[in-house]
Length: 67
Image (cartoon, rainbow, N blue to C red; front, side, top):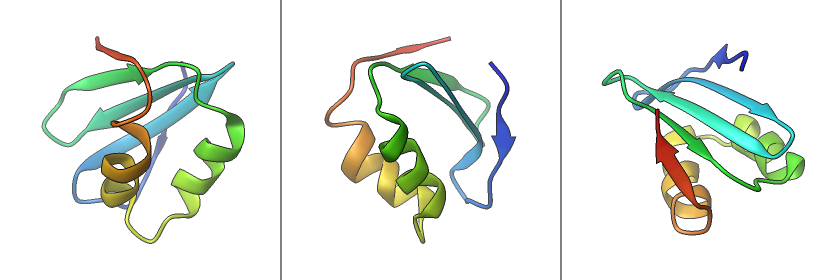
């Protein structure tokens, strides 16, 4: 999946394709979150703090796996 770099102290890059959100963290780990709607991805990119958005709106609600 193609990811784009973001300005965040905790997330290095993000990508989204067909409901799968992929996050590469600054510590080098990469996670995929499943069944994430496109508007949620758009809101993530627009959030003032990407890390805070992930913690509040992604991690508690979507199944994931570490790559």
